Length: 164
Image 1 (tube, rainbow, N blue to C red):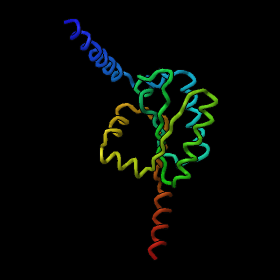
Image 2 (image 1 turned 90 degrees about the horizontal axis):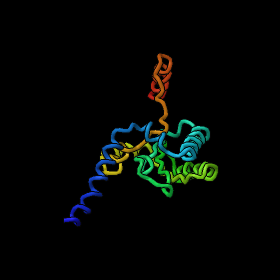
Image 3 (image 1 turned 180 degrees about the vertical axis):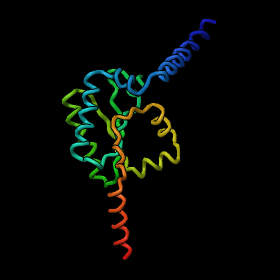
Image 4 (image 1 turned 180 degrees about the horizontal axis):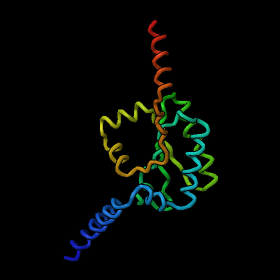
């Protein structure tokens, strides 16, 4: 009987931690990261915005640290969604993580996806993407450009010129 109770206990504890995590907002989960981890992530986002500007669409923290389950040896998994680009561009985006990692002593592990691939994953609703939606912490999203009357007329004029 004692053996059965010992086997059941870890599952009950695990379920309790999941329900507690579900109640925390992404902002609260981000605040639970260590100071150096938050600084490394914010530094990485700032570097991406400064160097690549509008080409970066999203920066999302995911994985064990985003869920609040990681330990001191866990890395910070970061998904960076860019507008497009080849392998060299994706490598350059990932390489920007080295300096914040060394400066703040927090291991960043970026993955770089194109916007098309990100949208494909969203359509297919694969397990990784569902976990990303559930547990991910959006560190930065490029604001959408607002359409104004002058923007619409400029775009319309450009389209009209292309047709003629």
